[in-house]
Length: 228
Image 1 (cartoon, helix red, strand yellow):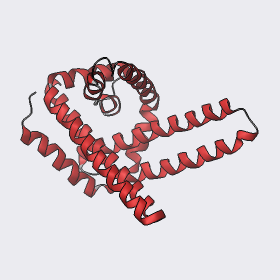
Image 2 (image 1 turned 135 degrees about the horizontal axis):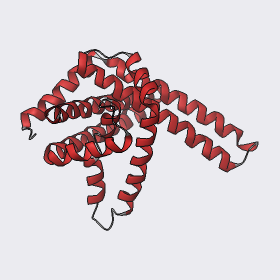
Image 3 (image 1 turned 90 degrees about the vertical axis):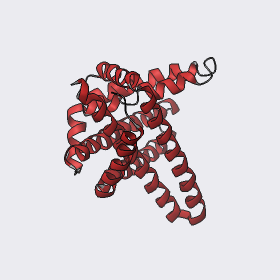
């Protein structure tokens, strides 16, 4: 399926409208981010009683679990928003309880592939990193929304991106630009307004994550439909 510029514009526009009507997608990221920070602080406070290695491993486990839960909620709720115009917290919980193991395995595989892409970045003039972002962008949508296994999710993401390289590349670039602009604005607000600015910056960051999830899930649903 080859998309036109208008098709991509429709995806971004529709994702924005869905976010405006489903702001609750932002909530889990904020809550779990606070929980992760609290648990990490608790683990770090035990540094005087246990080894530093155990503290580091515990902190890694905490953030791995938080990442899996956040991915399940953001992608699951984005899928529900596209499917029926309305997302609920229960959609994220359902995605986590039904696909938690697959999400974890897929995330580990993506991390391993990311390490390889980063190692080859200098030799390939960053092309390996760009290819990584383009060809594996639909993996989590495939695993959660498409209910594929981790390896099948990686494969489906590659196939969809390969058949639609230019549109997928544009999606990656636009999301990166939106994230960069949001990060800059968040840093600016956070630096000027103290704690209140920090809260606003965190809210803006989660809004960007939710919007990116909606865009990726929308593109995934659009691209896989003809194949089915």
